[in-house]
Length: 76
Image 1 (cartoon, helix red, strand yellow):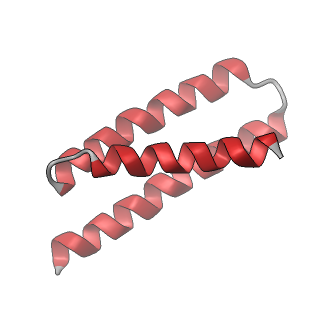
Image 2 (cartoon, helix red, strand yellow):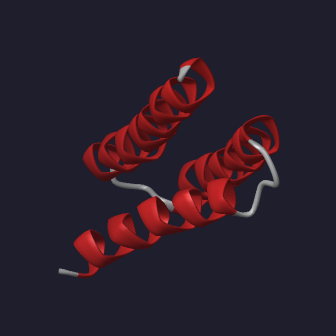
């Protein structure tokens, strides 16, 4: 259960980083900084390979989702 809560915290923090940007470009920059920090934290502190893969997939899958959503805002 703790693992799921932690994944939700990661998703929430990435979305909050995007919302803090004054525009789309700044928001995406903040998301990349937070995603890189989460990636470093994952690689340094986790020792169970399946959990590392899941957590990295959550981090970068969320980044991909936010970027796609942001591209839709720019195009419309």
